[in-house]
Length: 387
Ligand SMILES: *Cc1c(COP(=O)(O)O)cnc(C)c1O
Image 1 (cartoon, protein in one colour):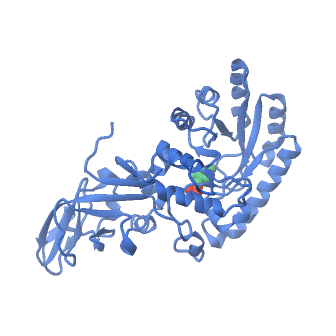
Image 2: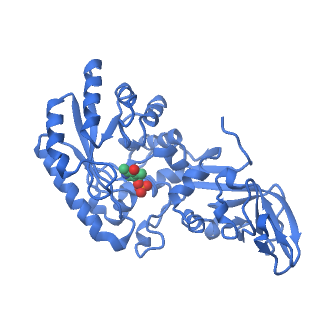
Image 3: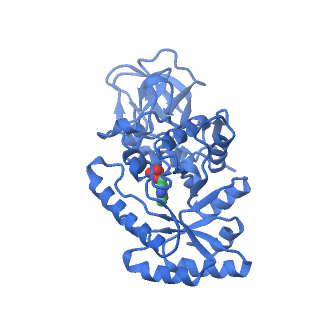
């Protein structure tokens, strides 16, 4: 059970999610099937709800079609998806890192992404015991230097695959380190070249894999790198990976999926010279009116937003005054008529062009939209949309 500290409204617009998926798929060649990345509870948007919405694209009159492959973080997430009735291929990005993962992958027909040969042998043994074959994806390190096979590992990899024919590589994947920074295009191109060489070698060794290297920014910035399917996360949730860069226009047309509203608890006057909240970090320069909102760092709304972030009330912007507390935050509403307890303020999203974007909120927060969504998405959510 989730305990709520405040009655926030965290509203997930599944129509926007589907529209973003369709927009991203339209950037790829038709032969590529865009892979939704729904790890970490779909970046806070709801694992099963998002998957069901995307699955519903199949039956709706949209040319896009539904995804054929999904990507999640762990085998447990994959098992949850299967139990919720999601078909198709499910890639486990952190595949077979725990000993119970092999059984979960086999039981639920999940496809673990493996990055060292030590993950292949136990899977092959478990598959043999169960009388099954196991599909896997191979992860190659082309410059991220996190997980992945390198050139030095390649000979051993082919030997291990050849001696375990019940384990079949079906995808080869790699991950771009700098796709969202137009200044670092040459590194993207270098990673793509290294990856293409790995894919050629895998295919030449007799394993007819599909290939995927692009994340959201990789697809939007470099559609020629879509290969057999880009793995899209952040853009599908409506954040433009190129916001604030010279390539901002390339990511135009995405719709923010998450909206977070906080209730107004009290509205009162703050006289000239009076301070507000812990530490007295804000003192009124003029007589002003403040609204105290029911949201704070216990709800994932960072204390780092103190005296920085803005919210939307009645279609207008109001700035935070003083420190964000555990469950309350005050904003300046001197210029906004008719703010009353019981009304709601948007801390993320909102109507018209004064809505708060995830990029803006992340900027005040000193982070990226990914983290904003993951943290605010821990609140109880409501789902809206036709799907
Ligand atoms: C999270 C993740 C993605 C999605 O990246 P976005 O930038 O959100 O599109 C793609 N591939 C891998 C391996 C990931 O871990």
